[in-house]
Every structure is written in C-alpha cells, then in structure tokens.
Length: 367
Image (cartoon, rainbow, N blue to C red):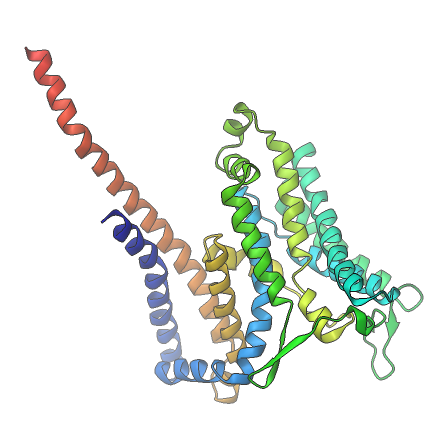
C-alpha cells in the first residue's frame, strides 16, 4: 500500500500539471479564435512525423545533457545558469582543437570530447571559486561569465585569429574538423540520428550511479540539504561546492557535441544558444532524475519541432512557448502541493503510531 500510495502521488503531480496546462492554453486559443482540439491534434501529428522524430531525438540529446548539468547543481542547491556560456566556449575550443589536429579517429574524437569537458569545467570552476572564496552568488557570476564567454568567442573568431570568414556569407566559423574527428550517424526514419546519443545515455547512467551509489554522491546530497550539518559531520562542504560546479560545467561542455561531431564539423556564430534556461527547466520538470529529464527533454523537443506547423495553419507558434512556460510553473506548484500533502500524511501516520504508546504511558502514570 505504501508503494502504491507513493507511486500515485508521484504521478499525480505531472498529470495535474499537464491537465492544467491544456486547460489554460485552450482558454488562450479560444480567445484567439482557434480550435484547441485541432491545434493539439496538429502539434501531435506534425511532431510524430518520422522525419521530425529524428530531429527531435537529436535535439533531445543536447537538451538532456543541459538538464543533467543543471540537475547536478540542483543537488547542491546551486543554480548553474552559466550552462550556455560554458557550452559555447567549450564547443568553440573543442572545434578549434579538432580543426588543428588530424589524428586517427580513435584519438581525434576522444580528444575533441575531452577538450569540451575540460573547458566547460574550467569555465564553471570560476563561479565555483568565487562562491567558495568570496561568497559571490553563482547566479550573478555565471551571468557575467556568459557575457564574457560571448565576447571572448567573437574576439577569437576573427579571421586574423582563430576564425575563418565564409566565402558566400559574413558568418565566422572555425576551421573544419577532418573526417577522422566525425562521429557516425544512424540512418533511421529517413533521417540521420547522432551516435553521440549513446554518450548521453552513458552520462545519465554514470550520473545516477555516482549520485546514489557512491560516497561522493552522498556527500554531495548531504551538503545540498544542509551546508552547516555537512561541515559538522566532517564533509569539506566548500570543496564539494567547487567540485560540483566544475562537474556541472564539464557536462555542459558536452551539450552541443553531437551537433559538432555529426553535423556541422565546425563552430560558427549560427550555433544554437539558450541552453541554460532550458536545462534548468528540464531539471525541474524531471525532478533531477535522469529518466525524468530524458522524458522532459523529448517533450520539449517535440513541442519545438511542431511549432512551425502552427504558423502555417494560422495559429501563432508562440503558443508553444506559452505551453512550455505554463507546464513549468504548473509542475513546480503541483510537486509542492503533493510534497505538503504527503508530509501531512506522514505526520498523521506517526501520530497514529505514537497514540497507543502515549496512552499506555498515561495509564502507567495513574497506577
């Protein structure tokens, strides 16, 4: 019964959030003069097309890694809003290193991946250092670091430095990575699925094992629950904060690696941005659980892939952004309500278990 009750409340929150989102968005659509049922059917049908599914899965990999990077910080009560800067700088440096070397594939690909992780970790560790040594909020420092990363990339991408200018456009990019630095793709559903998704799966498995089955994971969770209590029990809490931020940045450095190694083979100013807020949102939706984050990442990609179809049918594509924002707020609220309900249930159970003992003690005192 306890397991069924726990499962029920675990499912109740996301189901309630989805129902609320559908009702709220339906009201907005009615005000716009659109048919809610037809709109939802359009999103479902367009997003389910075979060629779109491949694009959604590739995008899911990037979103998933951003979500895991954010989730690692959440476990320490850190908001790594610097994922975007860490990812872009990491991919840029990795692309430069890959374009400047021509090693055998079994060395070239790992070199590019490790370079991205190291750069992401080093950039994130700046915020970690400022947090530990100067007590500067990681949110503020990461926002500043995002801006610095953008300026640094633009400066280094100049043709006189590390970048190249396109022959038919003004877009700046890094030198092309040779074929030995490419990862293969799987041809399914008429599209090319990045094999880097296997790396993302390995990251998720490793994240779960380290967090739940290791001493480091226990210390991380303990520090996140109570900084002072962790220090009192012998855990080097400042060190854990610094390491956690660096690990989060290292995972963030992998975010766009699938796109780099299997599609563009170069970094340019056209590379996608905005992964920081998306990663934080997906970590919230997935409750920092690797499976939950994966489901949320695919759902996010599904909605974004279906957005262009709305414009073609007279419905503003911004309705997808509204759905995403609403479901985040609804999910967070629903989980908080469920948390309070389950806490009250536990208090009642404890009270019911203690009642006979208290009554027996009272009878003993009377005698």
